[in-house]
Image (cartoon, rainbow, N blue to C red; front, side):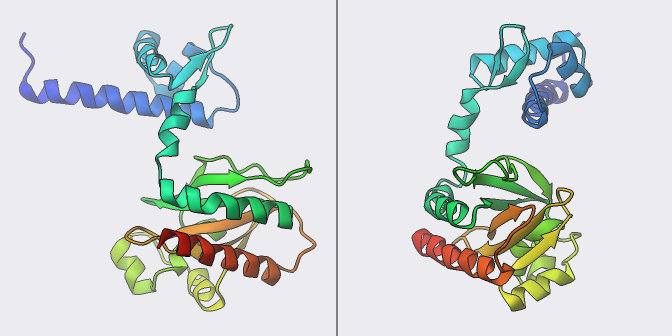
Length: 238
């Protein structure tokens, strides 16, 4: 039977979607996965998963260890370099300074549909008590200080137009007035976060944030340091 034009177009799209899903699963996994484990997580037969993995492996998007388990590969880092390149370049020196001055994990989060995604993160040197905030980790935009800070860059009316169906938190209006957002126990249990918006010319606002379990610093002093860094980042972005 000759495939219809519609089915011929749908098949490559499904394969691409499955490949992307495989990468998402591997990125979220705490350890390398067997092909059987990955196939189960994807909801496909092992032979289908194997074909997808071979293609991803050819492009260095995943690698297999000596035991045959798969994990994200170096090709992903090459792709990630190009994501919001100007923002990453401008933010990295500021993140390094914030992390080592405040002794907190510092990161930039960006707005992706209904989610907040960590773009780049820096942990402080010479300490083992930091909160790990992996690049690529994501959570709902309506939860946590980074998401609140991103919302605060827009008025409630602007947010409703830009993100229909996603509520504008009352905390965003407060953060807009105060200049920074704060949250505790919202994204990671027991963890606090402070964040300020970063306005990106021609793009969606981002957030500059820190996360910590406990801190000796006054939150307003930490927020002031974040705000000063955000202004310098914005000046670099033009």
